[in-house]
Picture 1 (cartoon, rainbow, N blue to C red):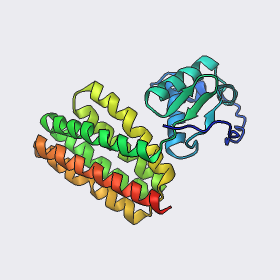
Picture 2: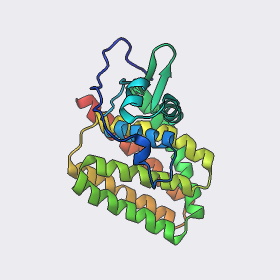
Picture 3: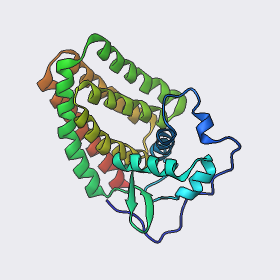
Picture 4: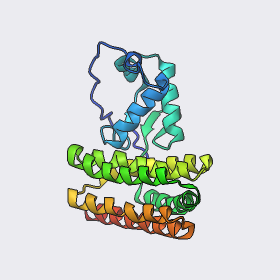
Length: 241
């Protein structure tokens, strides 16, 4: 993984806001640091904060009207998810992946997420299958309403649900640290038209079918095959740019 050193900060100065970030969380079941981490996560996944961007704590404290400990705790959470890197004496940067990083992470993802699908096929109930199928429908509807971001946010929810269904929280944590940066990379670096995204959505249905059939071996194989297709697609587009 690489980071850009010595480049000027690419972020525009945040606009001032009258309300504190903490007040905007009223009614939501999350702490202020978790809320800030969620905000940064969305900005990274949507490409509003791009690879190599420096996140300046003092700037965001002022923007969000929160204390520095809250921002720092949020960044530590993002670091544990692989979305940012804290470089001693330099600051915190949005994780930047090389082509080799992407290839290596996809290889690991295939093995670990294949295991998650295998375990999920042994545990999933009818309501879990229904939820996975609904998330596929959400990918389609939100793609139509909100564009690429609508697809990506539901795609992440779909895969996160499989990780949870595995029943192995350590496996889920490992996959989050691997997959979320890959999705951010894909969102920022790989441009796709709606028809291509529809094809990607359709690839999720065989995964659900295998899990619904309670066929652990096939569920692993189908998900691993899908991950390989995603890798080949991303690398092809990047090399054509």
